[in-house]
Image 1 (cartoon, rainbow, N blue to C red):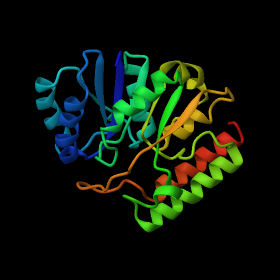
Image 2: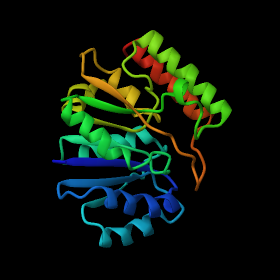
Image 3: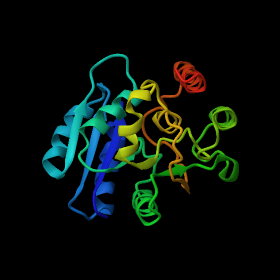
Image 4: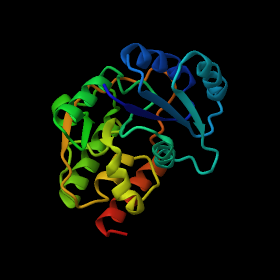
Length: 233
């Protein structure tokens, strides 16, 4: 591995970060990488935990986003702006994205000279591992709508686990909807360029600590994102 910025947006994931961060460092054995935890003003002691971890882990950075409302996409964009490497990986902080896929995604991106490699849950093939039945069915429906009306660029535009070249962000930055919880869809549907994108199947793990952030507000934000891309506004 040459260089990599790992962006992890978080909100009340203290117990999961205790496990996730050491695990990432046990997997990645290179000097030129960084982990940017972009926290959305958590109230569970995340800040205190990360301040201790900053002393233990080199290249770990902590960014606090205090501006309301809480918003994953805005946290990711802040992380993108603060990242220093040309290869950027995004993953959740809830342990549902297994760190073991970081190396695989990176190698696929580099070896195949792609613009983006996406950690696809492949819900049709793999079923609803890690998802409730309602969330699984909702995800299938949303993915179908995005791929049918906006064009299929990936089997899983709703995933939050992906790696891409920073040049893409530079080209779409002014076209981003920039709100909500589906930053991947925002990026890939903000351009008409034929970027080289490939799906990499991953196993989506069960959440062990904390609670899911999915709610009606997030679903409405996904709908607004869809129409912003459909109408190109």
